Structures are given as C-alpha cells and as structure tokens.
Length: 244
Image (tube, rainbow, N blue to C red):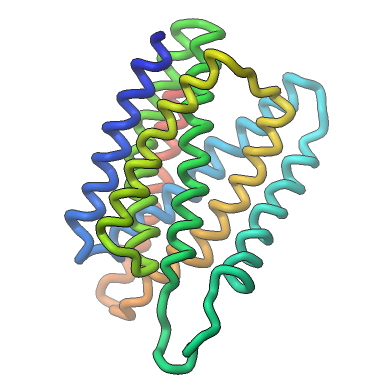
C-alpha cells in the first residue's frame, strides 16, 4: 500500500511540472533548454547505470540493451520522418511542427512514467527503505516529466486542452504502474531491454527536437543562458540520481 501512496505524490509532482510549462510558455525556449539537459541526465545518470547494474547482478551481457537503445533512436527517427510527418502542402509554409509528433512523444513519456510506478512498487517489495529512496527520486524527476510532456506538446503546435489531457495521462501513469505490481511482475532482463529502448528515444528527442527548437530564436544574447540551463538540467538529474 505504501507504493500506491507514494505514487500518488508523483501525480501531483507531474501536474505541477506541466502547469509550470503552461504558465511560462512565452519562455518556452528556456524551459526546453533545461528539459534537454534533464533528458541527457536521465540517460547518463539513471537509465544507463541501471542497465549495467542489472547486467552485473544477473551476470548477463548488456549488449542487448545497447541494441535496444539504437533501435529506439532509429525507430523514432523513422516514425517522425516517414509516418508522423504529413506531406500535404509542405511547401506552403516555412519551418513548422507536427502535433502528432508531440502526441507520440508524450505517449512514450507516459509509458516511461508507468515504468516509474512499477519501479516504486518493486522497490517496496524489496524493503521499505529501498522503496522510500526510489520514491524520492521518482517524485523529483516526475516534475520534469510533466514539464517535458507539456513542452513537447506545445512545441509541436498542440492545443492547450490536448496538452493538459496528455499531462493528466502522464500524471496517472505512475499510479497505474505501482498498482500493477500488486498483481504482475516484470523480469529484470525485460526491464533492461526497455530501459535501453527508452534511452535511445530520449537521446533522439533531446538532440533532434528539443535542443534545436530551444535555439531556434537565433538570439546570440541568450545563447549562453540557454547552454547554462541545459547544463543545469543535467546537474539536477545527477544529484537526484545520487539520492536514489
């Protein structure tokens, strides 16, 4: 039951992050710069270390997870370029964004949030202290999950209503994930593959979508600030990961 209670805290943390992005949408490029750093930090200090830790504990090769990382990167790249991009009237207007890309990105983040809840539930199955530490880490970075979800929706020209709907989906996902651990179990080997796949997705949207959009204003006076926020986002996740 403790897992469910702590997962409820992630609901409010995620909502707060998303509402923060909505409130300051006129400064979205600053938020996106921070978000890009967060995504890099999650991959470098959370997902990859967890993959290698599991590989060491299980005594298996982590190559499969690295293959999943590459597949995740290339799959989303392919979906964005060949499936999600519409081809009608492309020449009628200049550089633009595609709402479906934002929705797909938000759905994938919701999938990750679901696994966050699963992580909380499994940690409490190990021990109360382990569950508490994992919960603190998840609650902290779920603020950024909410921020990321809304940022990706807005930057791809989705409406405020649709952005809020995806935010609520992302917010409820950890609660559902924690609840699922009461009846199902996820094997460590399967979790390794999922973590690798998700790391590839995060690397793609961070490098290909979020950072270019953050710097699209072409204002040299803000470049240093934007880079600084990206570094700050990475450092933030580093310390959150150390708490866990």
